[in-house]
Image 1: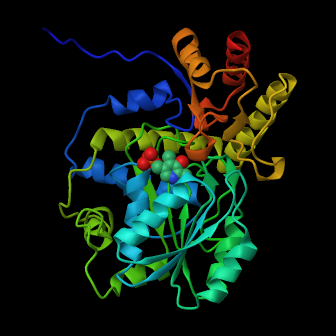
Image 2 (image 1 turned 120 degrees about the vertical axis):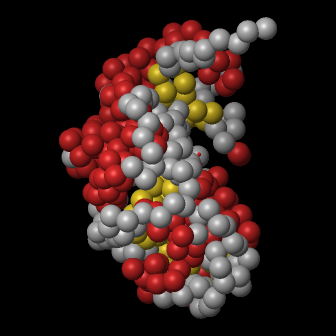
Length: 371
Ligand SMILES: *Cc1c(COP(=O)(O)O)cnc(C)c1O
């Protein structure tokens, strides 16, 4: 048997990520590979850092992309900030809060769970009750944009509460970054992580992260070594940090970073405010079309993520069959429900490059044809 080159089909990606990657980003990734310590490459890494500082709205020096997907950015935050015996309050209102709990426990910490119903936001009152009940807690972690449900929590309020009780904060912004307002410095977020394949519309495989001074200090003053060699920020920063001189830590995914760089240049060209406004405008257009079809949303309007629309599967429609037909007949990918929402909802992403009127019309027409 002779295996030949792989040519993927051209899909329209309107699920929970990855989102459509523009030809511009794909072409950037096809440029020549250079050495990861090549001065030309290091200059580009410095630009990625500057562009990420803009996207996160932060001046944090410790801002870079972890060489692995969003889950590694999550693990990087927890592995560096949680020490054995630390008590961490984890707010959970969907799938990804559950992963945070796993991370805390694997770092030897104790997770105190604050649970909210899936499809609703993290309740600040419940967080405050937990902070009062656990004065020895040192960290609060929550998901800004729960991709499993499409609900957006009030990050600014939750972070301010955590600080009132002397806790540092870890915020999951995998789906929120550039899709919805996010102000790392203004909101005083201590540690944050995202992913390349959601609203940035770069291919999966990189996780932008940012840490403020307080978080960096906690990491420097750890009693024990970070248990992950690869994610230990004290070591990684020898490669990403500082000016000019770089020490070898690992071989950066060179061409993948070209793609992230290009996607961030596109964000800069559009402007963050314009990007947020476009995501909101397109959410409203999609909503209008879906409501005309009699389809309703899981999340209350004021809590909805414009970039991730979770809708109830219409009565009589077969979940798997509809999604399979959309993929096979229309090359269109939408997301299935996760966990308890499996079989009950679909998740329609309007993320980054995929958030446009053409995709909205295509999705609505394809859904109509299949239903
Ligand atoms: C997608 C996602 C992740 C995980 O990112 P991967 O790149 O799949 O590892 C984490 N948190 C949220 C909210 C996400 O949407």
